[in-house]
Image (cartoon, rainbow, N blue to C red):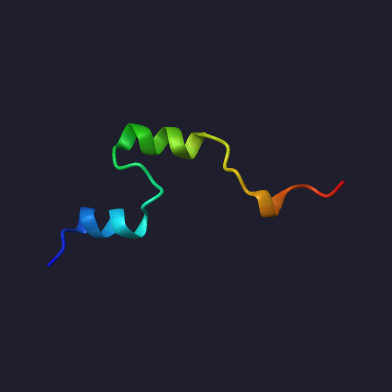
Length: 39
């Protein structure tokens, strides 16, 4: 069977693996082109 970390990595491929990087990713502003405010 695949390890939980590998399974999570496959599902959350865009998320960093390390805790510090994960925190930085969560703290960084998320880019959502489809969520741009209307003029």
